[in-house]
Amino acid sequence: MARLMRDDYERAADIIRTQYGAQLRVGIILGSGVNALADDVSDAVTIPYERISNFPRTTVEGHVGRLVLGTFEGHSVVFMQGRTHYYEGASMQHITFPIRVLRILGIEALIVTNAAGGINQSFHVGDLMVIVDHIGLVNMTGLNPLRGLNDATFGPRFPDMTRAYDPALVALACRVAHDNGIPIHQGVYAGVAGPSFETPAELRFLRAIGADAVGMSTVPEVTVAHHAGIRVLGISGISNVAILDAREGGEASHREVLEAGYQISPRLMKLIRGVLRGLDA
Image 1 (cartoon, helix red, strand yellow):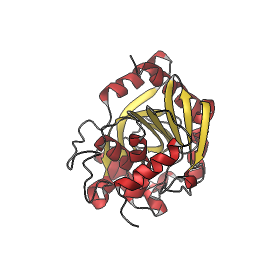
Image 2 (cartoon, helix red, strand yellow):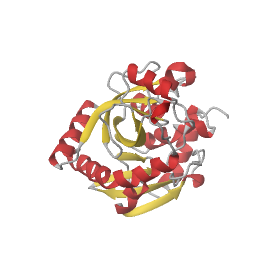
Image 3 (cartoon, helix red, strand yellow):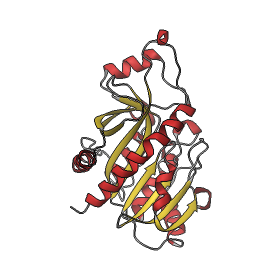
Image 4 (cartoon, helix red, strand yellow):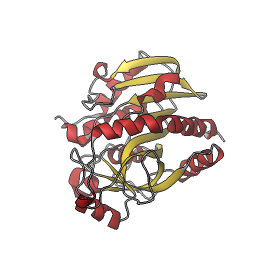
C-alpha cells in the first residue's frame, strides 16, 4: 500500500466536514459487540467508512464500519462503530488512519474500548478494566504505526509513552465507576497481532511479564493518538478468561466475545456517559 501523506488525511477530513460541520471534541472507538452505544447520539449523522477516502474497511463480525457524529452528553462526539485490525491485512499506518483524521477534525480526547481476554486470575467474564498501561508486542517487534518518515505536524519523532493513558481520565473513570456502583479493575493491556487466540504457553508468558488482559487492537490507535497530543482513556471489556493450561478444557471463540459484549454494554455505556459529564470538571 502507498504511504499516506498529510493531503490524504485532509481529504478524508474534508469529506466528513461536508456532512457534519461542527468541530468535534471527543472520539469514541467501539469494540466488538458494543455498537449499540452510539444509538443515543442526538442529531446523528452516519457516514459509512467506504464513503470516506482512504478509510480502512472492517471485515470482522460485530464491527459495523461507520462513523456516527452528533451530540452526546453535551459534547460534540464521533463514535467509530468498528475498527480495522492489523490481522485483516491493512498496514499499521492504514488501520490508524482514522485517528489522525479525527485529530484534524478537532478531537481532544479519545475513548478506546475493546474486548479482551482476562489474564489476571481475579477477572471474570463481563468485568470492565480501565487500561493504565500497555505492552505493545507488535510495536516492539517492528510494526510500530509511527515507523517511517515522521510528520511533525502531528507529533514528535520520538514520542514519550510514559503516560499514554491519561492519568486524569483514568482517575475520572474510576471515580464514575465507584459513584455508580460499577465494579471496575485497573490493569495492563497486552496488544498482539492475532487473529489466532493465544496458546496457553503464550498466555502464561503474558501473565509473567505483567499483562492483565490481552487483545488484538487498541495499542496502534493509542500510539498514534498519544503522538498527536490526544488524551486517551482505554476501557477493556473482559470477554473471556485465559486458559492457562490446555488440560483445563474449553476454548476461546469470537462468538463468546460478541456475547460478552452484549452483557458488558449497559455498564460500559453508563461509564462512558459519566466520564463525558465529568470532562469539563
